[in-house]
Image (cartoon, rainbow, N blue to C red; front, side):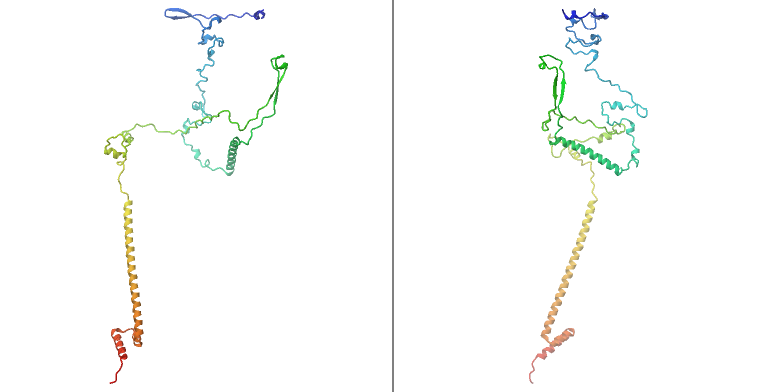
Length: 368
């Protein structure tokens, strides 16, 4: 007895689907019937479902080893989401177009899309908003910053310190289950089995099994847009000012071109500079003249001082010689010379008379 003969008869007779209406397809003067849906089951060899009508509102055909997309489900070229966005309004009731700019962006990204971003914030310039925080707020902020930094540093040190062992696995877990296959040939005839589950310890010195790559950081918030004036047409003067002369070297000429002198002189910008004499040259000349006059005055002063010192030295030497001569005369002339010297030396005649008297007194007298 077969399996189909052992099944009971169905209670309800299935209703046959309505036959599809044939469609006339014209081409090259001939008429053919175009049918929809799949061919009968034995004749599906070579059949490729390409339209939705080939699936007849049903699923895929498992006997066809092809990529099938009934009801366009799973088709790669089908867009997952539409490009239509829901209309949203801002706090003033106006249409908010930020949703168009924020599509596919981060939630905390700052996007300046309105005119308010260009208006100066007058409230921020209020002295009340520019007041410095009090000591309590400064201490609280510093404490929170220190805690955040310590947390990050400790996490970095914990991963880099090999002495820090990871958490050890817990106690083993026993799982009891009844296998679906029963009999003497399975598990030695045991009706139930027990499995012991335990985590293996992690070696802290084991190299990483996977290569971790950091995802590049996304773009930050764009800056506030700057409003520019509308573009103006370039005038002939502006066009001439933007003409940059070619670079001409005064030392190298690899191509061997014959460069005119005016072009060579214009290359280094000599014609663009005005030759002006600085006022510092006059100041330098005046300073040199003043320094020269002062040096001459100092030289004349030193000359006069040297002459005066020489004259005084000569006078002192003459006075010393005069005193030596007078002392020698006193020692040689006796009391008259001393008296003459004491009289103050009254002229040449007195000195001669005194000298003659002294000579007469010294002469010997002979008897008459």
